[in-house]
Each structure stands twice: as C-alpha cells, then as structure tokens.
Image (cartoon, rainbow, N blue to C red; front, top):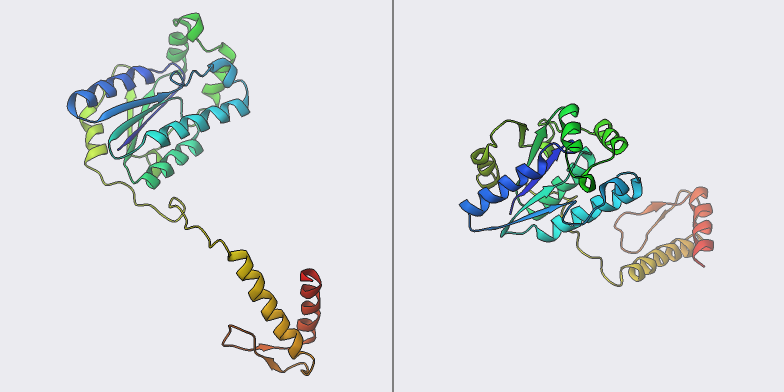
Length: 247
C-alpha cells in the first residue's frame, strides 16, 4: 500500500503531521498504518548527523524498514528529514518496485521558526545548534516537477492538513509502472560461466586450426555463427593473445 514521505527542516512539525495522517487513515480505512522514523529506530540525532557515514547507515536502515513494511495491506509513513533529493529518488524507485503509489508531504517552515521550536524542546530531544544549522544549509527542497517529489503537498505551520487530497492521491491514482531498473532481474544459469568458457574456446580453436591453411583475406567459419569472419594479420595476432590468456 502507499508510502507517505514526510520532508522538512528539523523541528518543522513533521511528526505532528505524521500523527495526524496516521489517526486519519486508522479512522477512515481498515488498513494498518505504520510510522517509520528516527525515533522508532532509536537514532541519536546529534551523534548520527555529525558523522556522514553514520547518517548514511541511518538512512539505509530507514529505507530497509520501509521496504519491509510496504505491501498490499499497509500504509507506511516515513517520518524523517528526507532532505536529500537523491534519497527521495531511491524511495520513489522502491515504490515503483513494490508497484504502489506514494506522495510527499513537505512541512514548510522558516529556519527561525524551526530553530525556536528546537530550543523549546526538552534537552534530550534538541538538535545542537551546529547540527541544526548544518542540516538547514544542506536541505534540498522538494520540487513537484520531479516525478520522485510528486504528488507534493506543501503544508505551512498554520495550515490544515489536506487529508482528502492526500487520500485521493494515494488511493485513486495508479501505481507507477515498474521499469527495468526497478524490476528483479532473472538469475543467470548456474553453469553460465562454464558454457561461456566452452563456447569461447571452441571459437578460438576453430580459428586457430583454420589459420594453418588460411591466408589473409580468406573467410573462416566459426561454431554457432552463420556469418564468416575475414582472416587478417590483426586477427592472427589477436588470436595468439587470447589463447595465451586462456591457456
């Protein structure tokens, strides 16, 4: 079922909006609603966002948790910063692979408002000022012209959440069709490498044997091919190089 991606500055009201969405869908549908976020995974924000590798690992954990929960029966809300457009694209590809709709809810606030809300939190839940300012500076705002940011619902701090419009976007819109990059590729045959090696050696040996009685310009037949190849000095030199590598 659909994925709702929250997005916004730190302390921009994302969690409050996610809770509104969860309550709405629990009241109006018979589907399970799962919220995935930093809090649920026990992420220490100041420690994680101060280290690029730890932040990358945290994003991977959130994505993996979303992937586990997205199915035909659930609604999943990803309550995190989601401030990197490349990461939002990965989430979009995830929904294409699962063949389910998604939407983005952007909690738009000023840096001043978010900073004030951050300072009014309990000390254990606050971002340090350095981390807060760094995240605001790195923030890549969503753009509805990007397919991975669409449909986009931008919500100001005093706005009423457009619950019906979000519901329509999720349940009355077809899922994006999967493409080659998001579909699971069939596994290769277990003896693929053996067959490839055998065919390669057969072709090389056919050319090697033919060149004993062939002069440049003659055509040589090779196993498994309908067209013949023209034998040249370059062919001969290349052949000896290949054979020396194989044998």
